[in-house]
Image (cartoon, rainbow, N blue to C red; front, top):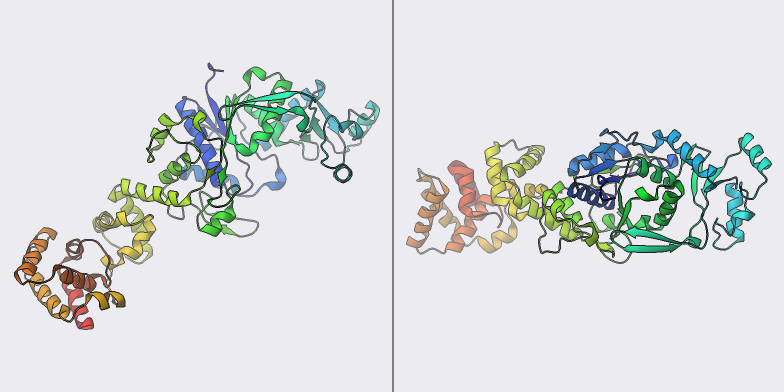
Length: 505
């Protein structure tokens, strides 16, 4: 195993939007592959044609494009092990179904859905296995001639895997160690259905992993119960020497209460559980996405990486390259990870702070234009530099920064009551006259002149600044006053001050 090139895969089903837990699984596969100089395969598992949702595959690919997780081969990426869409591999699977039948490792079952329901009603906790298969209609219990006749008549059937009883099945798991399952708890899983000539997940998964030379299967904890079956299938095919190592990741849990994270939790608490906004073609329902909610992709990946794994240090902010160096699949938690969406918001804030004012300004400029403001980019960059530390999302800049681009038309009543004193109008008029006389309206010169004027006249610094802020902003918010006045320029500063004096008196 150690000599083989590391190859891992992410293999979603196109049955709807990609859950954020799936994103984390893909991320861990990516980190593991890059760390070992290996390959990441993108495979589409679409054998369940009844659950196929139009647009889901494209949505998944676009999600990873936005997140910045590149695949080395697979659907839409090419490669030497295709096709990578299971529905295009029907003929490949048939060969392996026949191999199991010929070796006596599988058998044909003709039981109808009605017969199976009747048996479930008759036998409590019914399981199709070594103890019950003899009483069912299959190629093990029926005469050979009848089996041939049923097949010749085109009667629909399934192929089931023949689980041998009374055996301990060992699953070598990188996170959980040696997991032992007794074969008696396993049922004879359906591997193939004649109705649509397609294999089930279990067979297709094993055949694909083998033919695509997958060395490690990193997937969610929910697949752990199927791992013993996959181990037995590898053995049945004679592929035990190339069986991949397993790693079953902990579940993402609700932020509150018990159970795994669901879309309902996001709807209830106001956070997305999908990477991109999803428009359900069947119901018309629109679900929020991290991209449209204003999250930066780097922040989402950093946040997800630490849900179920930590580098063993206090470091929280990590680039993708740093994660690759630090990641250790064996250090993933066995217990589920609570989905702390508030921490996700914190990560977004930290990444906004890390990014250059120019980069954030490009995002903010789009929002400004949507709100009817067409400002020179250097002015947008200046505002971002003054205000980005105050927001968790770029879209929050708009309500905070509107006053930079639009003069106030009303003045906040609470601020007026608290900050506009009896002598404020007279003081603001004097300040306006002082500012009007300045040839140099730079921040530094304004601050020097105004501060000296306040001191020389025995005025109260706080009262002057609070009243001045009210005239320029319309309320008691914003950055340093001289940053605001320098940005607005002399003409606009004086215009706003004199209008406020006139209205507030």
